Structures are given as structure tokens and as C-alpha cells.
Length: 177
Figure 1 (cartoon, helix red, strand yellow):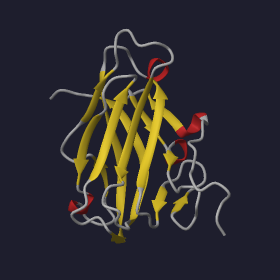
Figure 2 (figure 1 turned 135 degrees about the vertical axis):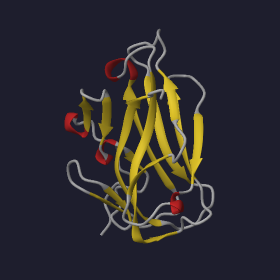
Figure 3 (figure 1 turned 60 degrees about the vertical axis):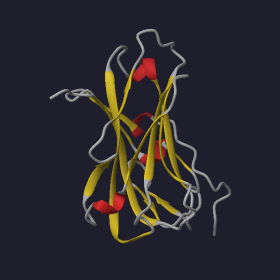
């Protein structure tokens, strides 16, 4: 039986977006994200509460989120966005299929990065984009209404894919080493 709503609307519940004061890092749980086809149990398995979201099968992968810039992030500071994910042993459809990651601050231009998930071992939790930072700077003059938007996409190949687990999205200060 399918749900009445095929897409999962991000839930605005405080415990789904957590601040780690020690590391100045935000952790956003999957239920706080917009997941296309996420409301249909044939395509996604969304855990209750803070658990992961498991992609069973889709041909259109679109997972997005947004947060208020001035409420959550420090003006003038540079951050990076990472999706913490895992590939199940029975994953499929990821070979030679790039996944695109996007970040957009307010009305600024979108910044895109791509990654190939198949490069990682099964059952291993890892952060994407791999070996590249999806970074943004919070403007000094951002309004209280400006949002940070971010997303993970594979909508262009039209290929069925599955076996991806999304544990959380992490927004952390960019550290120069």
C-alpha cells in the first residue's frame, strides 16, 4: 500500500537538526529533508525519528534541505556541506553514474560538485562529495529570511538505482590545514 503523498516533506522538528557545540557542526537527520518519492514505501524506507533513510529503488534521486542562514550559521564564516551515506551490499545502478551535490546561499548562484558513489566499499559509512568540499560562505549582510539550500541529485541518467542509506547531512566550518 502506498502513502497518500509520494514525496516526503522535511519535518520541522527541533531534534532532527542538532548543533554540536564542541565542533561547531550542524547535523541534519533524513526526516528533516525533502525526499522525492520518500513518502512511498516502495521506493524509500524512512526510519522513525533520527534514524537513516534507505533508498530501495528510484530512477529519480532528489534529496534536498534548507536551513535559515542567520539562525544557524555565523555571518562571514565559510562552511562545507557533506552527506554521510552508506552503500548496502545489494546496491545497484551506481556504476558510471555520477551523483551531483548542490549548495546555494540565498539568491547566489548554485555551486555543484559530482561524485561516484561506487568507488567506496559496501557497508562502509562515508561522506560525499568525496575528496572535494562543497563549500559556501555566509554573507556578512544576510537577512533573517535568507536560506541555505543543499541537495543530492541523480535525475539525468534515468537509470534505476538502490541500496543507498543516508545517515545525515553535516554542515561544518571549513578548516584550513
